[in-house]
Image 1 (cartoon, helix red, strand yellow):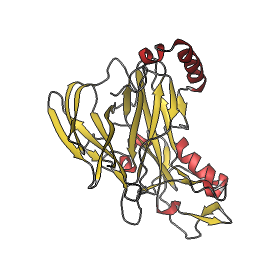
Image 2 (cartoon, one colour; image 1 turned 135 degrees about the horizontal axis):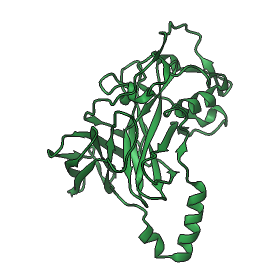
Image 3 (spheres, one colour; image 1 turned 90 degrees about the horizontal axis):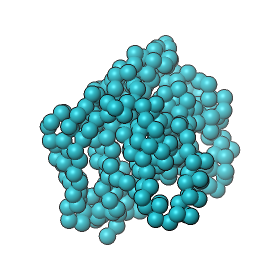
Image 4 (cartoon, one colour; image 1 turned 30 degrees about the horizontal axis):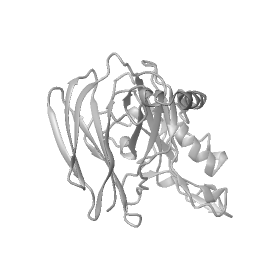
Length: 322
């Protein structure tokens, strides 16, 4: 796990470190936009577009896509790419809803986004609502950071899953965190009037009845979460690997044509306990070695040493212009 910020580095400048620590403590928390098992991300999207939609049954227009528990050490900054594909049947929708009542009006392929111009004309920025929380089985004390990866809108009409991500810094001890992304279905296309979103389209849909999913661990599996911006000449490559104990896996990622590797290679360890609870004592232990390959590629070698739960490593690489 990449340590971007650590206590030793901060201690090198005592006065600055003290001021920084105070600021971080005031901004840290145990959750952000989380709500009930990550549904706060969907509420943020629906409230921003139309406050009257904030209380609509989960799954009517939006479903949160929830990750597993991500191990984080004290003093570390981490980023996690999230795909709306976490809500597909193979991964197990039950992990995202965890016993919540919901309308099964999926699939939820497309990324739910908030356009700043809806409330602030002239502002062309776009944000993807995400939420996160820390686990009780550790002493993590997190603050949100700017997601440095890229967002991919996805498409309900083309059955292509969208993706985005979250970033946090842990100012406390070791622990775990998980994050959720707001994803919308085909009914979640809101009409825009006079510069602001006012509600869903007038087309009528027959929604299925409300269901309650059983909380159970999804099947951990491989997944690629890549996004690229050809105009700006950059890309964010993330791939997840489902690991088996004492089995070594290797892989090499290569930047799109014309781009080279930028920054450091990074990874996260993500696990899926059946009871949806994080435990530092029972965390998965993985031996991960990352190696730069030339100017435009990077490799990873992973061996799962210990695991109580299904375990996935997410390997990340950034690419940019030469």
